[in-house]
Amino acid sequence: MRYNSPFTITFAQTFSMADMHYHDYLQLDRILNSQFPESDKQNLSAHDEMLFIIIHQTYELWFKQLQWQPL
Image 1 (spheres, rainbow, N blue to C red):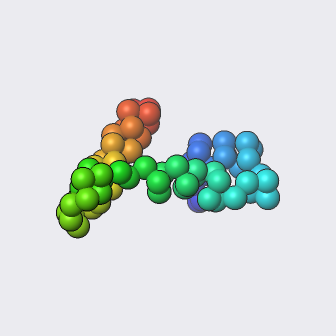
Image 2: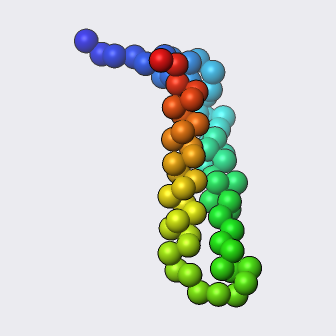
């Protein structure tokens, strides 16, 4: 038996992938341009700051999903 999640059904009924591209649907320009290391503003070298920002932004997105997901 194949499981169809509510997301799959809703998504299929709501959107036609011919009308929207993956990049646009996920708003990748906004996401990928949302990291602003303080070290860059101060012209300092902190190579792990970008990793810190991305990891913590990802945590926040997971927290948002947990709040949105019905129990």
